[in-house]
Length: 623
View 1 (cartoon, helix red, strand yellow):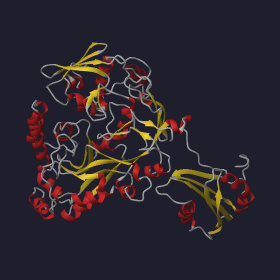
View 2 (cartoon, helix red, strand yellow; view 1 turned 30 degrees about the vertical axis):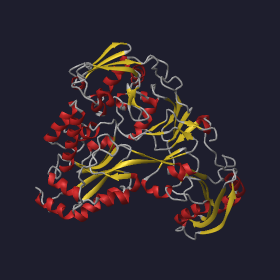
View 3 (cartoon, helix red, strand yellow; view 1 turned 135 degrees about the horizontal axis):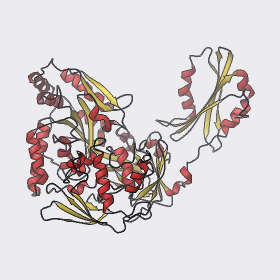
View 4 (tube, helix red, strand yellow; view 1 turned 90 degrees about the horizontal axis):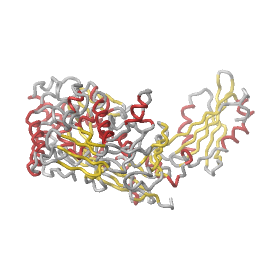
């Protein structure tokens, strides 16, 4: 303010942020003032509302206190619009504040809130969203968690995908043929499949992408999980072969893939992001210069990345040359910072908002202004507590069973999750084609839990101090705190919570020193293999707890290649029962999605895979 070279001018401190709740400007000032009360001789000398340039009302308090060098004054100003807050603070000597008072209030009153237009994109041309602080990276081969994959699926694609009805469909592949023995797949690529820069996608690009993905096995084992059925994968990973022998480029448009046994779910596994195609030319050229190629990815998906300022904003533009119907919306703008999504939605700052469990009572209230805009969908997911079964004390199944039935899971889910989830008795979710509605209910029996613990190899008094890993920065979630308290009350167990950064949790979990951990899984494809085998087979990379049961392994291995659907389903049901009976983990709840969607947003698909499908989404002109 004023002459920037005037050393006598007070310095303004300006902060723009988001509120965790809607407050008035004067209430915001009142919340901050107590931090100043301890100053010697503190008193307020003036306060009033101020009109801003956009008509918004702000509130200021002028205050005074005795500093080391005499009387000091300050001005604290707050303005609120929806979930946004503007805070201005200026402090200096009494003489300086009074000398520049008119200038100060001129600057303050000139402030205004405006609707942002990132990179000049008109608001009405963009679907504006805020889910999180953005992806960790945009490399399909190593992404492991939903937060990152939700962005990758807009920019990249693979040979197959799921349609709006969650049915397997063609993507980059125009067709596929399967040999009589079910082990050789021949894919023919679409003639119009192009990277964002216009280069034609070839079968060589697919082979390169898959070999690159599994070559990163030491960084992320995700690709091995989804491509591991292909002949030659293990030899390629261990270095005994220079390529994957089961992936053969027949010609530019034809790829032949041989798997180790007939498996009904193989095509579905190719929908996972770790199998997506990347541009060999870009990856090799950019990575040679030690620059992350994925910061400006040349993908094949329905949207292309045009701008990305990590922690601030990401802009995707419709791929007008997309091989299927191009997206209708010109842009998607992801805000990568913000406050509570519901509040931002109510203020018109975003078009879609995910609703947290503790907010459902608000949005389902009879007087809630946006109640008609709430949409709910099932999610094929399971949230559970994992045991480190390969170490004490959970290497003893009696201890695992004691910890399982010592929990009042019904009360836990009702109180902490509410309508955002359904109590789980097993691991396959309701609505899944293989869901078993007749699976026996897991009891809550604290006395039996104590008896089991006393009969275990550790006994009632032999439990060591335990460590529970969970996501979080400063404090655990309410559900984790409740788990710890129930174990303490019902078993006398001393469990310490170890928090890990939420963004990195699934990348570092396998490295943590603990005994129990929070885990969640959302279906990648509609086959029980994706839950039971991927999570609990002793050799699965996603079997984080190291659970091992030879009988279970045999059931799962038989189910992999069983061709009779009814026999295969029976094998998986036996496997799920065994997992529950042996307390391989503690199932807590199956999730559901609650989302607020603006009326002008049409054809937004909420998938059961925890993703939003924007390919057919459009924005009405009356936005």
